[in-house]
Amino acid sequence: MLKQIEGSRAVAEAVGLSRPEVICAYPISPQTHIVEGLGELVKSGTLAPCEFINVESEFAAMSVAIGASAAGARTYTATASQGLLFMAEAIYNASGLGLPIVMTVANRAIGAPINIWNDHSDSMSQRDCGWIQLFAAHNQEALDLHIQAFKLAEELSMPVMVCMDGFILTHAYERVDMPTQAQVDAFLPPYEPRQVLDPNEPVSIGAMVGPEAFMEVRYLAHAKQLTALERIPQIAAEFAERFGRTTGGLVRSYHCEDAETIVVALGSVIGTLRDTVEELRRDGLKIGVLGIQSFRPFPLAAVRAALQGAKRVVVLEKSFSVGLGGVVSTDVRLALSGLQLSGYTVVAGLGGRAITKASLARMLREALADRLQPLTFLDLDWRIVNRQLEREGAKRRSGPVAEALLRDVGTVASKVL
Amino acid sequence: MLQVRIHGRGGQGVVTAAEMLSVAAFGQGRHAQAFPSFGSERTGAPVVAFCRIHDSEIRLREPILEPDVLLVQDPTLLHQVDVFQGLGPDGYVLINSRRSFDHLGVGEMTRRFRHDRLMTVPATEMAMKHLGRPLPGAVLLGGFAALSGLITLDAVSHAIRDKFDGRVAEGNIAAAGEAFAYVRNEMEELARAQAD
Image 1 (cartoon, one colour):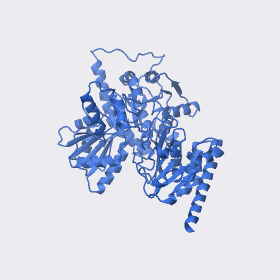
Image 2 (cartoon, rainbow over the protein chains, first blue to last red):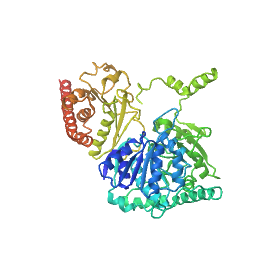
Image 3 (tube, rainbow over the protein chains, first blue to last red):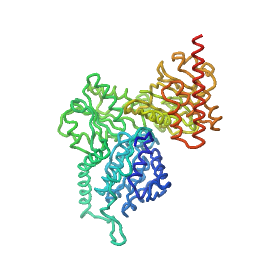
Image 4 (cartoon, chains in turn yellow, cyan):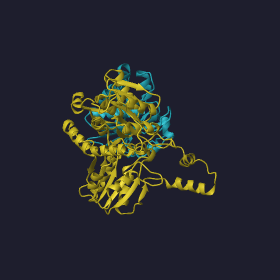
């Protein structure tokens, strides 16, 4: 059924249709509306049987999720930013123990300086934690990915993070097609655990493992995640057959067939990129977009296959590794090993900086002329950067950076955007 | 694509108004995308929300830099924020006030826009009368329906019922209806004055 609703509400309803038995979460912007929506569904009895557990922190949220999942319950939680960092230790435990928890990450920057706006720093900081990480390009995909995530997680006995851009998607009202309970039930069978804590057949989960077997346990987790490279497209295809739309999968290309230049990106910026590329194509420029839906496991072969015909690859990412540059670009480069391609990393949208079509078009024209710096920061305000560098050069006690830059920028309340 | 930017203050229902507008457009079979300016809103602080309306899927995710429509929920913002930024010469402007553009001190700076598309409506007074609370969002949507004809009053009423229940919904619908009638009347008077 078509509905005009907020992204968070759409995700809450989709999670509800997936019949989780335990939901535990701690509120943090921009994730809050999702768990508020689920709280309402549980309280009203629309989602039953399901226990909504209020916890005192994100660390507790993931710890409760681990316990609930180990006891055989379909388990869901959601977080963002500092909340994800606060649960980091338990996140590794959830994957190390092979528990099929599904978690939404409403992507948001990490402080300091504290910032509530969108970028991908939070989930990227956990890219090596052993969870599958799927990225949604729009709210329909965010909704669909949650239903697909429970199926994938439970088949493999491995946790799945569904990443959606905070505010840009979570707080956007747009049209979504909400499936019926019967459709979701037919797609997603009841949870059948591979391992479970059962008083009638006592086992322990979570043994200490020494040097004799630790590497083997880790290898098995890797081998299992690689099998997801086959299952993710299969599940997306099965979903498409039942629900009549293609969402999820490993990667999705747009105008890549004859493209000499391909822009690689994750998340909601893919929409703006598609519009930009469509305009550039009207000027005869051979350019395409490759969206990555599955960041972990990283689809090396699919990315290579999509990019190997191009001359030039621009990785546009909302993440940044201080002291190196791109995060996504490093993985894309691995996929392109041995190929002769010009590669550019463009860091954009950090801390919620708007990524506009005009800026993207300008940057892409520079790339097409091979005038782009290998590492480019889209719309960086060099004026305030250089002013701060001058201050630091002139005076040892130059003061805190964030406060100085805010003074240089002036009041933002009077600005429209 | 029609792009609407709504300016107001935290607590006035700016974001809710953009969301209702998207629901109204959806009700008329169109694609719509509403989103806030993603600030950490505080009561009284300037707030912006956006709504795009289109006949096909909307993929663009940037803030609205060149609006076709401006709805201003608080006229005191006119001298604090450059609300007219990016508005084209054919743009629509609806300001929540009983006073004229000249009296609000923006007569000069709005000369470059089409006169028949600039309007004020006392939305807060109408909200106080029908709702008992100073929430002008839905009221301005009623006025916008009359000013532009781009959405129907009926679709606005449905959107209000989608968002609110009971007396709150009915109060908002009554206030939106009054704003619709007020703006239409103003437009007719303007047309008569021009004909004379």
